[in-house]
Length: 561
Image (tube, rainbow, N blue to C red; front, side):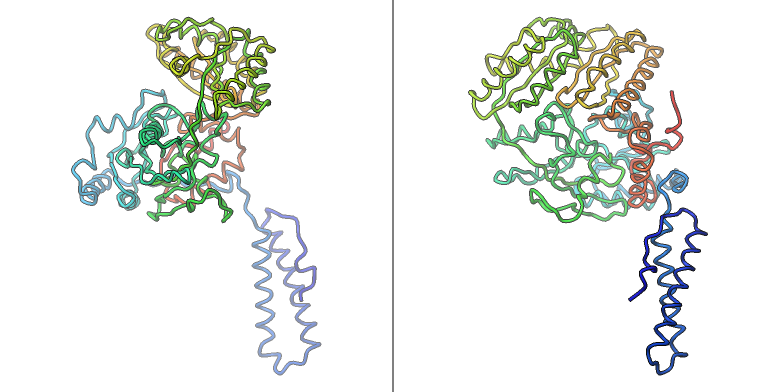
């Protein structure tokens, strides 16, 4: 119908005047077209309707032109936003009264100083702390809706709290106070579908409790994501967690969370998808909330996938240096053998195990690998162990030791899992700053080498523990006073910068929280960060959900320590 020139693709422009010029040009095409048509078709009363036709077509084309070509850029300049406006102290007092009436339970709302401190401060990190105004303990999705609507009504920041194991300040309070919504009373396993290998639960139940329950019921399944003890499903989903099993089972950003029930900042309750193992119906809104750290909604129910429990055993082997250990792991992984976990422990960590004294053995104080093998039969595990032993020896590995019993395997793995307490044995009276980054596996030796050189220069004592199978690198940096703490901060900053330059990430599994948000511009790029902000503003226009976390301040992209 219309001339091809009407719909010719024009180059995008950020100039409004240019786009309006194009609109006028398109309007002229439309008027010419209408005149031609009106001269060739007999009309009963052209004066009565020709202006209407012309105006309708022209205005439609102008609208099309503006929508097609006037596209604001997702830059910080184009998306400037005002600071959130929160309620007054009197508003907050009224909100607390209303919450007590709405929830109608004596222990559902607390303003006790001890509760406020526990929820606004952490022994696990050294980021700035701020107390909440009130702690609220919901027991159902309906309770969460009431809390959210109250927060919106009185403009109170709302911060979710789950297991309290965050290492990056994810549940710190807002400087103005607000509501901390503690999900620990929503800790029920709702349904177990053994035949479908999935389970429906509330967000406050821990992964360890889930696996213990399945074992007690004689169900040969387990949830394979294994972050720190005490971590709960809601927090694990919100931070995009993983653990030692990631080399075999992946992370929270895989398909382990099938769906979630979420209370949005509007108070609306959504369920992201059905329980089917896979779906091609639209984009995956479940993943929108994985890694969002409670900034887009409050998770109240989750369906998680389960995996079959397979027999396992453990082995340890020692290397002259990290480079050869990492090269051995790459070779092992490329053979496709049954590896559930492979952990890199540096020589200082091995020394700390010996000093700590909890182990039943004395280890060579060398860079080492701990393997966990898995397979359907003992024969398959034995074959994997044989192949791995041959590979590591080719790369300079010595002292390969395979557990001879289930107890010995448990004890070997416990030595690896005791990293936090073992590490502190290296420096009497010290505290530890734990952090993580992740790089492509082939870049891990360079990252470890350069980081350890930097720590030596600063005179800091540390240990390195890495999920080497996927390039995830953890350090525990020890300090005894404020001066050493500042050196630790400096070292962490440089380690993160180093990882990003090696095509890595500022956090492999701990999340962003307060501690890592300044690095997102450098890692993800401004366009991606602003896209994240756009999603945040769309769902939470008042900026109430976990403010100050995840999204970097715009000045941070230019700041350097």
